[in-house]
Amino acid sequence: MILSDYRKYRLLEMLPATLVWSTIFSVTFFTFFYPLSMVYFIIIFDFYWMIKVVYIATHLISSFRKYKKTMSINWHKKTSQLDKYEDIYHLVMIPNSSESIEVVETTFNSLIQSTFPKERMIIAFAAEERHPISIENAEIMKEKYANIFHSFNISIHPDGIAGEVAGKGANLTWAGKKVKENIIDKYKIPYENIIVSVFDIDTCVDTSYFDYLTHTYLNHLNPTRSSYQPIPMFNNNIWDAPAIMRVAATGTTFWLMAEQVRPERLFTFSSHSMPFKAVIDVGWWQTDIVSDDSRIFLQCFLHYSGNYQVTPLHMPVYMDTVLSDTWWKSLKNLYKQQRRWAWGSENIPYMLWNFKGRKDISLAKRMYHIFNQMEGMWSWGTASLIVFFGGYLPLWLIDSGQQTTVIAQNAPFVLQYMLTIANVGLILSVILGTTILPPRPSHHRPRKYAMMIIQWVFLPVSMIVFGAIPAIESQTRLMLGKYLGFYVTEKTRKKT
Image (cartoon, rainbow, N blue to C red):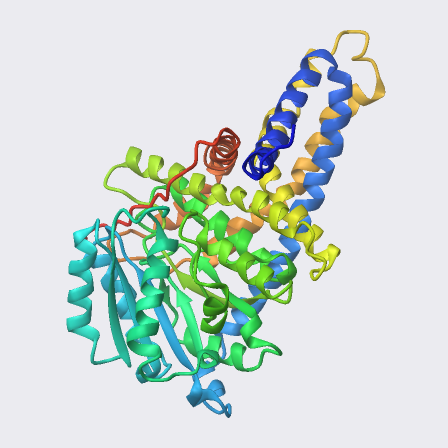
């Protein structure tokens, strides 16, 4: 029987969840039936986890130093002296669905405070027909700010286009085509001179962001063959968010910050920047997927035969921590956000399918990206469960004859020693998490700083409930063909 391409691709979609569930079932089986063997495995795994935590912590410290150094430089003064500075335009794409005008307003406030000349900034406000409030927001922003920027283009993405997933990728493609036709081609701006920044609606940039991005672009050896990834810091409303949301948000920031000093591993994530020429060359964003922010990197990687990379920007963009009008709703929204991020596992079958036979891309590059994505998704769904639940249960189930073995007697001490060393990551999170906090709002008392430290007791809960479980659900949905739609995380600001 010859399998159709559809069935072959479906088999690849089953792979991530198959690896995760095989691990869970194997750990459970050996724990109950061969507990002594499981003790050996747990010690080896915890040793691997300890090394990995120390390794990540080392990279996090290195990245944090680069971030602090980057933030101390006057990028406008430095960049404005470059020869081609005045040739560069920034296209800022802002997709909006159902977010409030208060959220949109803060994003535009950060744009107008930018030190980069606004007369070379083009705004593409991407509204959705199915969300009338996004159209209202677009008109309000255009009336208020249109005369500040080079151009202000509003696009309204129609609802119900056949073959599309109702999400950001489809909206971006619609908006990109409109702004190309209405503004870029009209003014005959060379595509190579345009850097497009795709921002979530809650993204607030540092005043130096566009100057720093321009400097990086103009000094890159091959600027049109790279995306540019800033550090997402979920700080806009972090003082108002519940503790568990703060831990999840800061943990995400630290993981992505650590990845910044390993650029060969980077994929684009959330708000990022890239050459407009690359967007044109690959034929826009895919309109039928959820993970458009990471998929656009793979589209470019394939189109340019592996000659495409992600360049880290050691500067943050500020975004919202998950927050709703009730604590329970905030928890549900956080889970849904993490589940959508974990849906990035859909890139694994995409890579396996499209990398096959691509001899124009080195085998080493192809295998490296596949391994990193598979190991990352596997660890996301299994590591915290093994560390927090698998460590001591086998010891309780060992029979009396095996309890006298050297490994059984010393295992608790070995595990405790390794987990203590691994706590370096927790200590580092406490220190750096306090360092990157924005100024305390006046409606919070100074004692709130203590809660910003105590909150890290929720880390194990966050890693399991808002890490492993949504990752397992996403990969299981992909395996079963129950595809996830695009969930827009609610953006809420408390009125004070």
